[in-house]
Structure formats: structure tokens, C-alpha cells
Length: 434
Image (cartoon, rainbow, N blue to C red; front, side):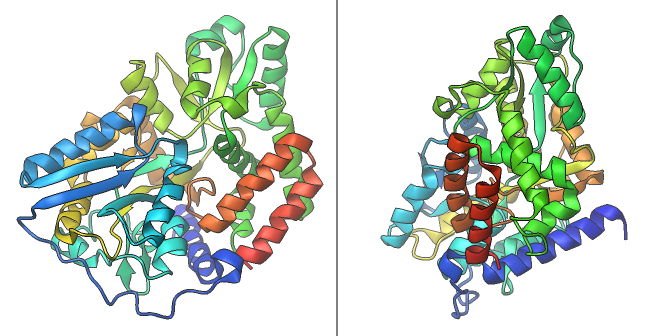
């Protein structure tokens, strides 16, 4: 077994253990049989279909392309595109929670594969099993063998992956770096040296947006400082958050964000990316939906109009997340919902969606000639790199942990107290993971 497969096996084990202990205030998984209801696909659905996501604004064109594929195949369905703006679903998740608990779920909703869906709605017995769709569409052999376990629990498959994203990416404009006389840094020592040089020239070294983007930057620092093995150990209890190694992560993070813009809290991720495009900042750490934004909205060409590399210290590691759709129990039109998730998993649907989104397809048989140089590069990385899961995007910890981590982050951004942040995170781990 090669290193990548070993690491992926460990990752699946981590997620499995986390699912047992995750949830609010040490809540346990539902004792009900979550496989009692399976979603039955139909060849001729009709009626209204509401799909719920956070793909609005600059991410909208990719969703619209996927919707067009669906509408060509199922013209009798009246599709309602219900999107809630807000990067990483920060606003959509709150609205979804109200609707789910209020008994008014959409037919299908977007979620991140892993603990975000399973640790929140599957353990609460609120989701329908998608296994019949995977079987009818012959999808079990169309996704990487390591992806299906992230979608599964108790014999059911609960989410349909639409894409694979990489979150540990550092973006820059090659012409600007050449003009400023700096090279692309590979590790933290080089990054700090480059940042100091840029700062002396009056250039903001690193652009950053609101709190969830800080969470993503933190996990990039954690991965770069700890390495993939110790990073994974955070999520299975083998490495405590109050360990000096993790205190060092917060200390390094404090140094990194000292090079960021002072108005970060008021900026969206797109506005932070714009700072790099407009030459106000040199680098931006953001998942590769930024590639979709730069190509689709800003009309920049991958490789010449913008460049990319891994965030410092993470070369050879792919920090993974996958957007997916699940179908809640109690939705009004499960047949149309089944048709939607089947479209999301189809080759045609994924090849329409992902080139515009900046992501790579979850399917292994996609037509890569349709994809940008960035996407081809990311697909190559995904095939050979060590894979670890994202905290900020729902893979390695429950939604409860992630929500409370954001509160820790807000406190840290105000006081920069690394020891206190580590202690607060250990309290969260005791509550949600251990």
C-alpha cells in the first residue's frame, strides 16, 4: 500500500471515530435505523423541486450550468434555485437549520462531505439514503474508492459529491511578483522573508477576509507547522490542542496574520482575492473556488493571468473538501430530488459545473480536456499527494466544533493569545471529539 492510500485509510478511520463522538455537548448518534428510508429514483419526475445552496453571485454560473443539464433531461420539473449568499455557507447553514427543525426542508441541499452532513443531520435521522441512486446510476465505480466512506454511515450513502476542492492554495499574480522583485515562498521562513520585503515596499503581503477565511488560513498554518500526521492526530484525539506543538501553530498564525490587511473582518473572500488581482496585495490563501472566480468572473487565464502554489510548508499535501447534495426526509418531491442528485453525480453534470467553479470533478472518468491548466494541476495533485481533510469546510469535525472554533478565532483575532486559544480549543475537543 502506498503512502497516499495509507494516509487516506487513516483519514477515513479518523472520520469514523469522530462520527461516533461528534455532535453537540457529547450527544450520541441516533439509535434509530437510519437506513429505513431509501430514495427511489424515477425516470419521469415532475412538479416543483427546490434546491438549496450557497452558490450565489460569482459562484452562480457554475450552478446555472448544472441546472441547465438537469432541465434538458427533466423538462417536466419546475426547478427553484434557492441560494443564500455567504462564503462557505455561513449564512445558508443557519437558514437550513431553521427550515429542517421547522419541518419545511427543501428537496435537496448543499453540504460539505464528511462530518458537516453526517455529524449533524444523518445522526439526527433527518436524511434519506441515496444508495439506490448510486446503484441505478452505476456510481459506486465512478468515484475514488476513498471518497465513498466519507459519504457513508450505518450502511447508507447520504450525499452525492459534485466536486473536489483543494483549500491549501496560495494565489498570486506572476507579473506583480516580478515587478516587486520577490519569489514565491515555499516554507514559513521564506514566506516571512518575502512578506518583510513586500511590507517595506508598502505592499500588503497577504490579503484576508472575514472570520471563516481566517479559519481556513489557520488550518493551512496548522498543516504547514504540524505536517499531515500530527494534523490528522488533532481530529482523533492523539494530539491535544493544548500541546506545545499546537500552541506553536497559533503563534505562527499570529505572525502570518500580522502581514494581512486591517479591514479583513469587513471583506468577503472575493474582495480579498480582488486585492491580489488589483495589485494591492501580493498573496491570498484561499480554496480553489478562487480559480473559478478569477477565470469566470475576472476573465484571467490560469498560469499567466494568475499563479498558484501550495501554502507554506504543505507541498505534497492536498487539503480536501467536497461539495455535495443530500435529500432530507419530509421533502415534498423526493422523485425530483432523486433526479437532481443523479444529475449532480453524472459525468455531464460534473463536466458542466466544475470547469466554471474552479474545482475538479469527483468522478474519475471526467473529460479533463474541458478543464483549465489549474484544474489539471489540481487533479494531478489529488492523484498523488497525501490527502487530509478540511476543518473550515466540514470534513474532519462536526458542525458544532466548527461553529465554536469560529468563536475561538474571533477571540484570538482580538487578543493574539496563543496559549488561551489552545486551551479553548482543547475544551472544544473535550466537548465534541473526545
